[in-house]
Amino acid sequence: MVITADRPEITGTADLLTRARAGESAAFCRLAAEHEARLLRQACGLTRDQNAAEDLVCETLVEAWRSLGRYHGTCRFSTWLFSILLHRHQKALRRARSRPIPLAALPSAEVDERRQAQENLPATGPSPAEETMRREAAGRLREAVASLPEKHQQVILLRFFEGASLPEIAAVLGCSVGTVKSRLYYALE
Image (cartoon, rainbow, N blue to C red; front, side, top):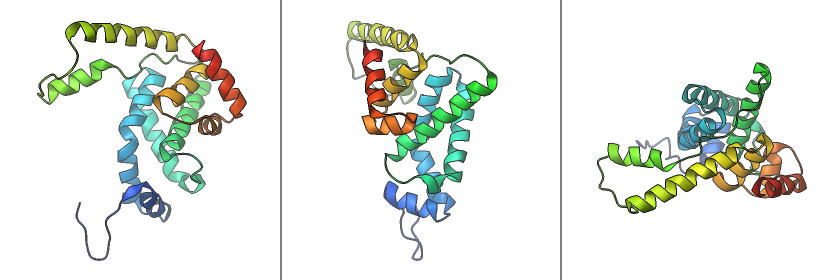
């Protein structure tokens, strides 16, 4: 990064948010770049289609830029972005008048292996037998999550893959913390 005398280095999410709210598009671009890969994984999980996921992420980031003034810091910025992504996805489902698409493409080991192979790094992981058992368990987990109703999939994704707190999940989904607890309980059952 080039630092000029009249423009200090942009550091930290809080500083980037302040600058982005002031209209500095470069700061928002940097924020977006930090969260884009995670949003894409989440969008792929929701849409199960790479092209639709990329479109959804673009729409999410445009919406975030337009509504940046409404972000008040009550939850993490990444959680706020996910809530926009989720609402954009639900809006698209309603527009298409289709039933909810199950979440079947959770992050998996295959993505890490491809990345590792592309970087020509030596394998430093579990044995092939352990890896096979891990893949089978991950497949069963994906199937189990995919079989849940969408409202339960959402709380599982937010809680265990996004690391959101119960109040953050409630804010994202627009429901009470008690409702989140109930959905989480039934999803885990």
